[in-house]
Amino acid sequence: MDWLKHAAAETVEKLQERVTKALGLKARGPSVPGDRFFKMVVNQMPVERREQVEAFFAAGKRWIGTENSVEVFLKAVEECFVEWMHRSAPAAEQETEHGEEETQSA
Image 1 (cartoon, helix red, strand yellow):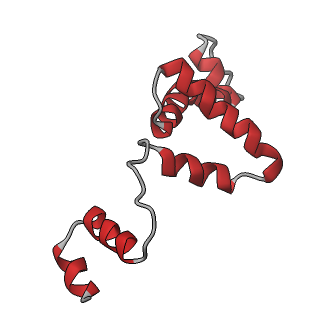
Image 2: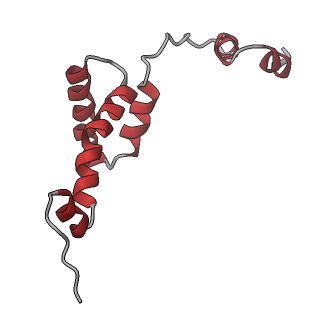
């Protein structure tokens, strides 16, 4: 079989299906969107934190009503970003944001 010819002419999905069949493996069903992202993130975590990360994604999926781990991550970023930006701002910027005047030394 000319794999290069197939690789040039077929979609990745079709080629993967052809290779799977040629190897006598079970065809994989369609994966849940964001599943590869979830697995990549969990596998990058220290072993002792993986359970916590899995629980984070499970709670996020319930909270926003999706099975897509990328959507869960993006929603978490959206909800945390403003707070983290505020907390990480230098003290002078935070005072100014709260209506207090910055003091200048003469």
